[in-house]
Image 1 (spheres, rainbow over the protein chains, first blue to last red):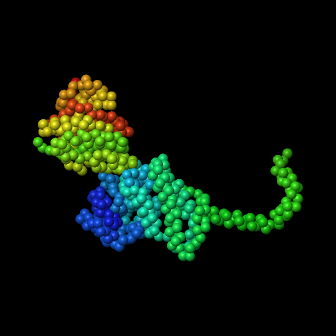
Image 2: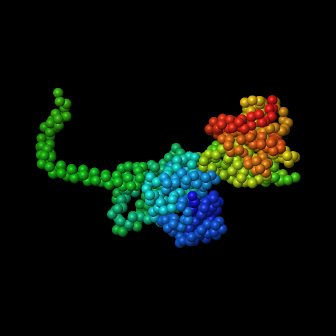
Image 3: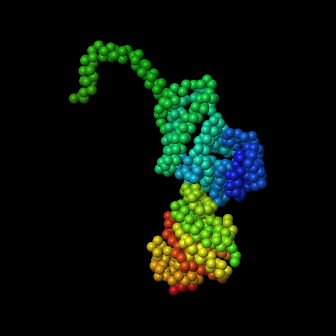
Length: 324
Length: 250
């Protein structure tokens, strides 16, 4: 079974050299370059890769789909230029393609993420499964940053590798936290947001921020770096909310922005569902209360309480006394 | 006199703190041979450590890292690193060995003095100054190979550099061409005795094996968890292959 590797680049010469070195064994390399000015394109051509030129785009995810069809082989491995594979990747990938044959269409590969000199041990940054190895035509990306692609043939066709002692992607993410912050802001500013103001819910944003912090905060594995990253990623939810709100017209109210969330550590879809269920329940209770207030019996009881307060208290005491 | 290229290969699964000390002692031990014009390089084979060693050794002396995502035998890891780095001589070194600063100097002199030498080891001691390794000898019957003078006070063991049938792979300087010609260590061994197997094949091919005794390097021995369990099948394989085919040292 043959394999094509697809990588998107923009001024990535330094990282690309390492990547090309570790995938010399693959059957085809496709480089989609966004007008690099640092020799990336020349480096890719010299290595024998097929090179495509496209205009720079802030989001690679959305354009990944259009180049998947360029792959000449039935299996595709998507890698970013700042990622690389281990020395034993070839036998591991080849045996995965054989193992998957007929049973699975895609493989979620765990990824080691490095920030500065530190490789993350947990905090939602490890194992950080990535759907990158798949049969051509079975996986599709959405036009949004850092969202997992969907398996067209169904999630049951996805094989999820269990670390340790299995194939990994190695990712040198950020030189330091300052670079992390700069890129998070860039992603937030260039991401796509729903344009319908009626669907914007500021209280969801604060809930998502709390959920993100709860999900990422893992001092046992990563100590202070976990606290720093969890705080920054929770903050990223707030930043995105404001960027989203700023893009809307007309602008909905931010009044409920700091409403305390009802829950944490739950995925977006589930959170949205729970918030809708909570709203339905509140509406039901308000409706029931309205009906109660308007009932004759309640009006009579309220008149009795106000007119004969002492008798009312005695009746209440008798009602609470256990029956002999 | 020929200036050799030497490439050191250290296989490690985790144990980054120990590995940093190992790399520091190796760098100090390489200084005298660099002074004689030898070129040196170091590869750390990261044998499926979680998290990876990359990033944890940044303040250690210069080296490169060859990463495996799945656990490999010592033999397979060493062979892969040697194949990736052609050199005149290879130094296979365990991550729990702290080399004496003159250990490589004496080992290098053996190679320079007699080109028939294919493998050279060095004396190593436990932290209590008793012998961990001063050459491998062979006993009769099921006893097979064992470390000569093990647990004897180093002070009491003569410091005469001598030929032996085998030396430990925990610190082994090997002639590159012979290593390649013999296809390196036999990867059928899970862990342990691939070094003695290799030495016996080297002797069969007509080359010398020497163990230097001038200095005491430190070897903590078997620091990697799970390593001891792999010794048993390795020993079984070794005895099937070599029993009654080596000289009994007595």
